Length: 536
Image 1 (cartoon, rainbow, N blue to C red):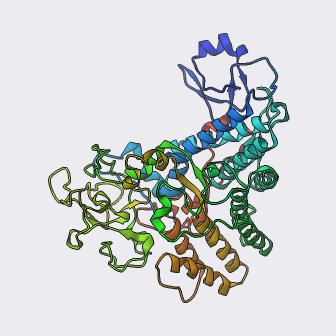
Image 2: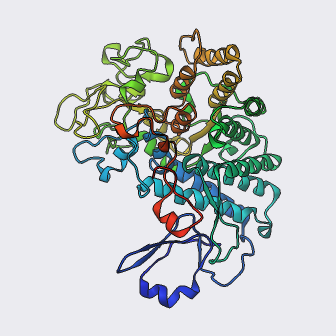
Image 3: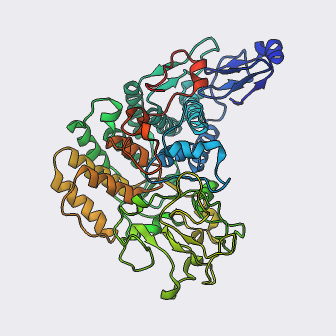
């Protein structure tokens, strides 16, 4: 069934409305001159009068669903922006007029977003559309194979989980409902049960693939076990109980243990983000927009042989987050005593300025070098030296702020660039390992949790911890998983999303309303079953 967005004038609505069937709640944005219909949790069909009889090609529909999900996750806006730029690990400061964008980036970091924010709206639209697309494939009238149905249930659970996690309630429309049927709304606990059931049912039909298989870009038993472990780890947030239940924590451990034993923590941190698959990658998105991860923080004059246009000079990291890693605060030069996950910066004094085109891995601070070992200059001709600190959300120079790089341009060199750019990691085993450790800690097995964390730290060339608190566990997850779309969910689970950090709106500190995003205003207009989240 072909879906589309329709923009109509009031006259067109009057003359042609009888030809439009709205298969999900439509959004009517009114003005004195025109009436605009936008796709939110809505699906529009050209076929107004016919009953839904199933998708014509379930395999093709599943491919479309997988690709659109990957494209959404590769974007630096939408899910990535809401999960990372809203936290203490990422911000997009305005530099002159660059990255001003009417304040959309600044408002995410300082928690002053509203129900009309671009990413709050677009993320809602995209996720709910994909839930509906999956439901069309799952519907018995589509006559999909058992494995395709299992895949569709996995993708429905994946997308619905994000709606539940970020917005706290989920609109749901049954396939084939007419335009007069207002979508129901699942509460957070109802959505939790729905996601859980989809994943449990999907497990029966998903393939059991090993590490390194190229089909890990689709759902597998290991990916479903990972998703269930993540669901149960956050259960006390979604159920509103306030504290973790030992039964849920036992499920976390059980599902991590059921991940295919071929998966393991990979020794060589930045190799995980290279073109080839590894022992850690459980589920990845196949999308060409990996370039967003590469270039959004790199300077305009940071160039490579296959990109003479340079970076976009936007995304940065707070010095406080950088300081959570083991190593000196004023340098990240190679062999300066830092842990592996903080990466390293080429240094001409160590005769390695030309390594990897002169570009850092991990966190880039200090002098930038070019591929020939010369110092990179800023646009005014001064040495380009990335600083620890920023002037604020406004008024920054082009060199201010520490940059973070996991997907490195050097790994996309000719001959492997296509495979590299088709590899954005969504689930990896080190995350599962830390989920298991956290579940042990929340169950009272602090010794077991500490041993698990120290095993990972040993592999990552970091000193062992002597004790383990909740703050330590959250910090360890931050060090392992920075800029991988998990930081906001982690902060909420540890009740730290409302903590203070640099450039945050003081009125938002300690205010739990920012643990979820507002329901978009246009969605509230179209669906009276939705209720705005508290405080918005």
